[in-house]
Length: 203
Image 1 (cartoon, helix red, strand yellow):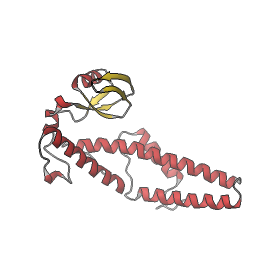
Image 2 (cartoon, rainbow, N blue to C red):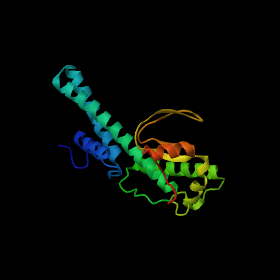
Image 3 (cartoon, rainbow, N blue to C red):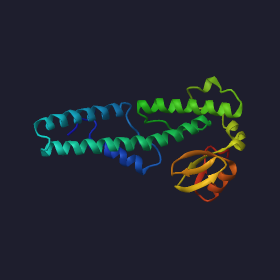
């Protein structure tokens, strides 16, 4: 059985299930991904040792299967959490409050960078210089500029897969959980049909 501070295949699987079943982020310890990488490194070393004895031995086959599944689960965890972190970044960049507890260290840095990029984009889109005091903390008064820029495009969170359709910029292919900026008329149609919701719309 893995020591308490270690990560096992069972732990990665539990995290994957949590992320796939809930809309918010499951809390992780700061060094979660470091633990995962140490576990995968040990697994690869064990597999190499078993293959050195007999590539077709049952132990080697089981270790190879565990490694394959563990890598797959890690990729799925990253996929789910990155999407949720992107939504948190949008909330923070727009001046909203977001619960950012339980992020692993790489995710904390990812969130910070996404918020910086979004604020820079909004400053460029609205012609307003970003407030330097908001560089490292959630904004509390930046909700108005994005709403003023609505004629330029509406940021949507896609709720379900949408069949390809033509628009002024070409053919749109939207998938569930995508974040996309669309012209207001197209955005209105998708929202009215329940296919999407507006992100950071002014109450």
